[in-house]
Length: 288
Image 1: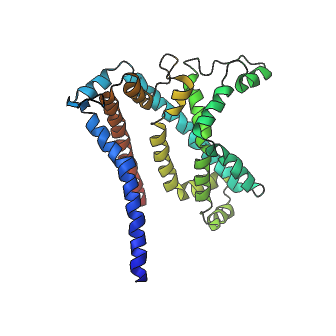
Image 2: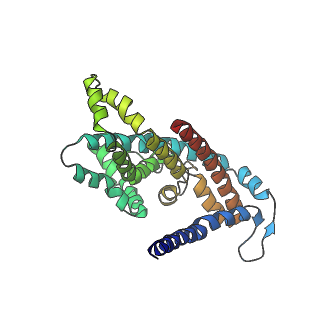
Image 3: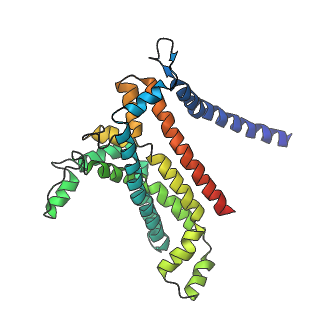
């Protein structure tokens, strides 16, 4: 009777999870797939248009810029958001004092709602009383038009994204580092290995799977960047910060072309699926 009750409880939790996935994850994906082949205003009955939505999305003048901006944002975000948290985790792992306090400080930005963090950076980037230009003025450097220049707008969004997400990545790396057996470091020190050799020959091999997993998760997340260009730049200046997700928003809610937005969403999902498949194959070969 006890085993049956435990099994029923487990099946109950499983059904609840499947219900949530079905309603909030799988149904929207299936609906978007269907929508990408239809022309609809969500009021009148839809009409099937084949691949016309895909052709229209690809032929849109902003299509190429959106993909280039998204790829550039992803590469820059990886450069900052992938390497920096790992280095911070290495430093925190070596500390003997105030470790808990510093973990809290690093994780603090994650606790802020994204919209609050973005608005905070909007003030930082303000060309007048903004914090960053005040710092440049203190250093006797010329001010920058952070969000108003096509040369600095994208990197400004990368800084916001890195600051908002660094805490979670740092804690995951830190948890992986603390699972490494201390004997491995002791053996490396007995062999005369310095800190960089210990990182290269002990730390990175022992955390390889976590590093590969975080690489995949960060690329998938950054390829869907939306809130930063939506709140800070509106895709400007001169389409310098239009991302694929932001272009989808414009198709759906500015042009009211839901089918074209769905088609662009399917193209983005296809690109992420190809990358995820390559990543999973690499991870599987690494385990073998």
